[in-house]
Image (cartoon, rainbow, N blue to C red):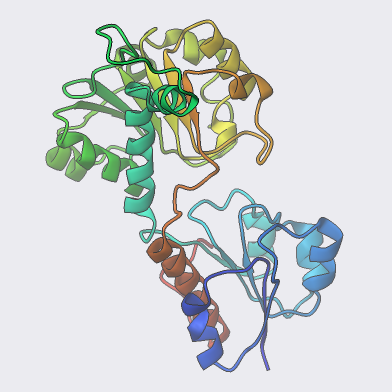
Length: 319
């Protein structure tokens, strides 16, 4: 019987393909990540792994799993937690969960953009604390979203979905990507520009690029200084794309004007200076956090495991 290890508790309905296949499925009951020693012990002799972004799949773990391991299904779109070269060398297939969380994450990116622009966090705290003493003409003035310029760093599935949402706000959309997307340009009116021009011209900047050695700290002190002083920065991609310490210093100095963050450089730790700033909206990595999206992610992982262990190649294979 094929053995499958799931490193975190996932929606049971999404895992039904594993049960139908008759696999021996072991799923940790915890919602928190396993410690390294625990994970290394659990993987021994398994045929398939369903991992989360907090699980580092490297040579040490692959060696601990042993030669029976054939597939690592990552419960995420990104796969920067996995050593792809080490998996290829061992003929281990790696899969991810594209498409099913695109709209969900794009919705959150726009929610963060609006929350920062209209200072919803500050307003909520004012009402809850009893500090609000009535309407005032100069109270909590924010940034206009309609008709503003939105810069997208990364124009893949999620970036494209954000561009589509921007049309409803009559926004001028710029994007910076490794490759041009003529189809999205035609559909959304987005215009490709250099990163430098995007930073300089955008009123709102939303990050949708993968984490790679090239994008690590892509938004550093120099990039932040290049933004408009009234700009808003949104990140629903990966935390280390931003130099978090540099961002905290820049926001404290008032440039850029605000930020909305769903991901952090050293999750779950957050740069302490960010916690005290009123011009930052912080979310606990909930970009894909809807029932339907998380269930669909589990189903993609389960179907990929079944396909690989049956000798096939899943459509969502990364390697």
